[in-house]
Amino acid sequence: MSDATTFEKLQTPLDDPSAWRGADLRARSDWIVTLTDAEIAEIETALIEARAQQGDLFALTKEDFPLPTLSARLEGLRPVLEGGRGFALVRGLPVDRYSEADARTIFWGLAQHVGTPEPQDGAGNLMHDVRDTGKSFADSNTLRDYQTDAAINFHNDGADIFMLCCLQAGASGGESLLVSAVEVFNEAMRRRPDLAEVLQQACWHMDTRGQRRDGVKVQVMPIYTYWNGQLTPNYKNSLMYAAQRFPDVPPFTDAQKEAIALLDEICSDPDIALSFVMEPGDIQIASNYATFHARTQYRDGGGPDRKRHLLRIWLTIPNGRPLPPNFEGTREFGATYARRMTPNGGTT
Image (cartoon, rainbow, N blue to C red; front, side, top):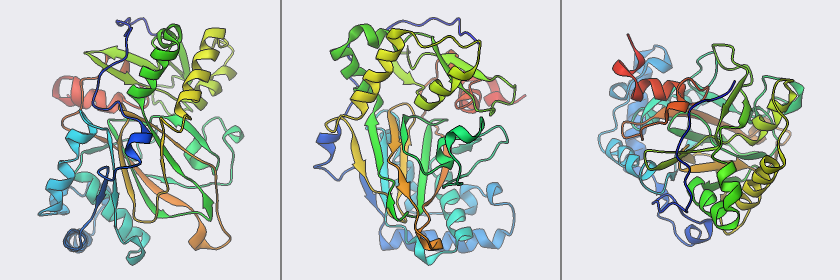
């Protein structure tokens, strides 16, 4: 379960365009992309064309969902996602006009103009429903946080990018939170450089929740890998704690406990984090290397129109960064690594 790969340790804060603070962004709106009436009309025309295909949703390509002008705007988000701020919120999709099936088609079609969808689990599913199953994380060794209504700690997902589309908001709660993963590291370096070094050690065991096809139960790697001049994180707070259930996983050291507590403290700092409420029709698009995201606890109402429901897609983007060798084969990033970092994109 160990990762023998060693990497240079970053010993100073990193000057990077993705190092921002929520306090600075709250006074701005340039991270919000509002769809125009003309762009919504393009989407609805593309939906009609996609319906005519009458085939598997996941076989639809961007050519099957043509967006003559919006496509350039979506593709234009790529340098923001990789090499820039690291996220955007697309607002204004009138999801109340569409059936759930049509909303899924639209979300899939929009994603095609951003990148290439990747599997999110061992079964190879390309789209997940983010909603409460009525279970808690502790009920199952395979259940994942997004399948509950509980608060979700700061973490990153898989592939280069995650996209979340809000179909319905719950009755209360469910506030979205974003932080700059680089700025979090920088702040850790300023406060406790000794713990910033621990965050870069290959000593962090993460429960794979039974999602790796090769059967590996625990991944071991740094939270932050410094490689090719970039910090590339893999942070799963709840999965690190869940891995402690395995008898061959060593208990957290005092230094690890302090490092996790420091990360939690920094991510929760209102000066660091950006918070917002996703309304129906909002689409959050963010880099899994530039940001960590979280969610407050939510509660659903009694009727079907008060059940919080989001859709999620993971994407590899054409301009994605080179990935460190220790990301090869991981549950979250293995598909992206194979697509970008191996000969023939991982195909034979």
